Length: 363
Image (tube, rainbow, N blue to C red):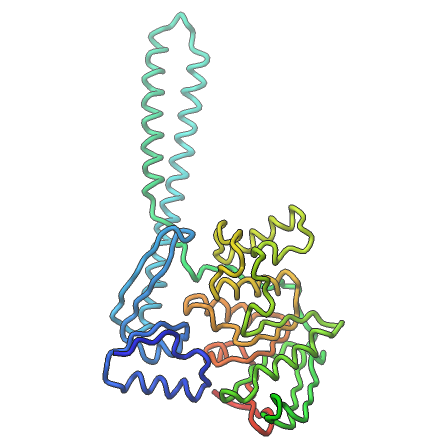
């Protein structure tokens, strides 16, 4: 039996395909943890899903003896049905409460106005108020037992502003590099990259060819430009994050009350709990750190993103949300990735870094 923890991390696309073939043909049980949706879809025949619900106050596990795509389809259908029931229950409950409050108000009003000379009416109203209070307690119990509106991992709310846009003819990058090297080792030569408007570029290539080194050089070029607002997301988040700060402190510029409130609202929208907002960044998971960097890009109003493996720390359920966010982004993206779904759904052009420069590629 093989136990594999994120086996696809740091593998190039050719090796990923080899890994899938190996898992499918090795003839022994394989239990693996992965964020790679394509790997899961192409290899898994049982899904073990661990999740936290209700603002991470309740844990749940599911074992589904079926392919991943089928599990996701059935899960979404079940959640949609649960939400429909939950919203109907709340609508019916609110209608009952409107009537209840009307009845309660009338009884209270009559109790205040009843004459002391009419003790019989007073006793009747006292009994009626007792019945009203009993009805209120019954409604409270109904409210406690109502079907929960799904509060699930994929329900994160990330979105760049609608005002983020780059003119289609604007030159974002006209990059040329005679030689890409690390110390005395030449990795690639005659590199040229032209990016304009809302291009969404992905650079792929074999392990060790220098993709991250190239992206860092591109970032140095773009971050210095005054005519664009660029942001760089490195593979190692700690290169940018300050370990001893809290997420709120990291995102804050002025420290003013209104800004802090806005930041906490943003953090809540990506499933940060109140406790996590006060934790040191060093205590956060890779996924929470990635969300923090995306929020920083959004709050800064960036229109050019330089992303090194942007989806690697998001779960298979959060990744579709991140892809939609990046696909609809109104600016330019230059990225390195081995995530085949990200490449196919987000990127408008795929380039392979080879010893002889960048060449157009297909996945």
